[in-house]
Length: 385
Image (cartoon, rainbow, N blue to C red):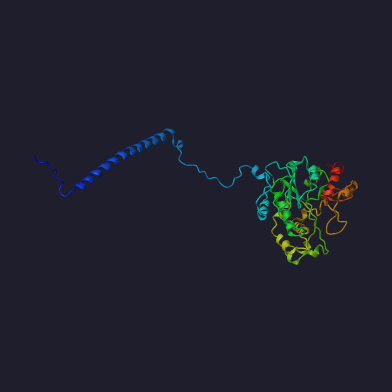
């Protein structure tokens, strides 16, 4: 039997033929995968076209919303501009704070029902031993006042949540009597108080101050006043003009040099003038150092130059210098009598709104902690609260 032989293609080896067959098989497998995929794509495209035609282009989302949130909250209502700070603690530097506090609306008429308030600003080293007398004085008038306390940075107040002094400390720095750091503390108090747009009057007080009338009398006196209260007189002696340094010219010449009490009561306009000052501050910081006591000269001189016609040129905080010395008299428990207050409240004559008045002082100092109990006993009948 003859065997059947399968002739090979001329010039080709058996391995070449095998590779050709494998290639054809791979192409067929690829086509089997691509054909269903292409069919699926066509089907999806057709469905999308008919969906857009049926529901309209707006029914198909064409953009992706960003989840990015800005790092600030844009004010959406007037309330966010006029609401006072809920927390007095902030991280602003003095430079940032004074800049922020100097903002002034150009339109004078407020677009809301503004209730003008009094800012009571306490400049103290630490505790407020006479706080109970102030609590009684302020009770029932919460919508008409605000409180700010500048103490030593290390001092931690322990007022109860029910107290008007609770959480009313502002960020503070060490201040020294007779130096620019004392004026810095006063400007710091003013600036923080100015952040509340409802504050209209700004009263600088110490821990030894007390009110001499009830809240209604004091508020009426201030709100109706046409002038701010800061002593600013020309003292020709060595403790007045004798402290002037010629290097302060031309910003301040000797005829403009004034002296006055550290304790003042100013309206919002002059409070802004104090915190926005950059012209006089460098001169006083550099050239008014002990024995030139800057807290007695800086504000009286500056405001006399800028707005002398707006000053009553007197203080409404009573003090007793009759005992002599660099500091006024301090009164303790044994001094607090009805006769003592008659001496403070009666027998005075001054000018109020260009008219003669017998009410010349609204506050008094200095009172020791021991004076608290007799003050609380006498205040209802003598002081009216």
